[in-house]
Image 1: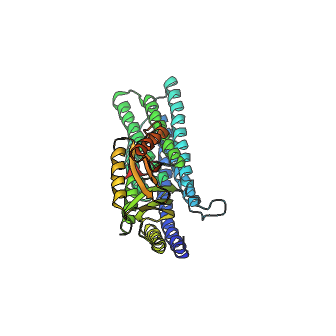
Image 2 (image 1 turned 90 degrees about the vertical axis):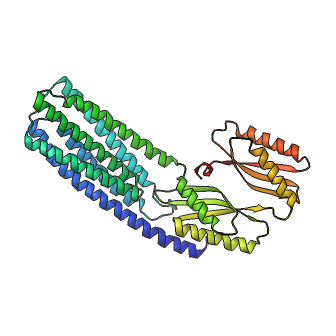
Image 3 (image 1 turned 30 degrees about the vertical axis):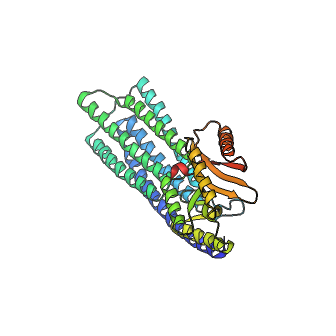
Length: 388
């Protein structure tokens, strides 16, 4: 990468990351303030009325405040500048903070389940007041608004930790609403259901925490890049008239909205080295400017344009490959006249159980069609083809 792109890249990434980090912190502070206030009100009402459901709801609000605090810590760690040991930055710290939030949610659910079972075994008759019910109703409304706000901001800022916090808040609104319904049923019919309701709610909380943890772990392991992003990058690269095809887009994620990657472009065999050099630099700059992605490498596939027989050969081989349902794409086709070698790459679906056998079968059939030529078939992994 040239010095200009390095400098340009640094300015763009630093500014966008600062704005994103600031947004995450602001939303998290709102969440902390709201949850601490709600927790204080609910705890006071819960102890006064003797309602275990309201007390557990108050504790759950405190866990939400802790989740928001962890989100802030995760955002701060993720925004640390790259260093010698972490040259790609610390963006994945956000995925770790999402994991911690998931654990907190599951812990809250397990604790709630234990306390609810205790109250089923040893019932406690609650004493609700109209004031208490009004506070709970207000808490339900606040939680719904807070959950929607935090989740939308999390999606906007591409923060899985905020999205998880928003989901948790929306789940809490269901918990509070259920507590309110249980209180009304008790007042009207003198039937206490809150302990049993607590068991159901606990399982819902545990399930939500498990789903959050699964998503966080999946992000840490590395997921397929978003289809829309792959299409947008392809369109950007194809906007250069010299580029006839874009293949093998591989993006490495180092935190939300933080990618480095590589790709192959197909160009005519008449393009000279100096033209190719300028083309690749311009592609890198445009992808960086439009998508904030650093392409660390761009490979070149050459297209035979000088011999009509070779063009016809490519068409015949494509007919063979279309018979294989698990061959998703062929690219990099080239006939080397000096070595009399036909070479091309095939992208094979993950559904194919024996990729080597597939490659050997294709090589055998192409060799039978063109026995005078050597055949080289390269297997490619489906990193992005099925996302196009």
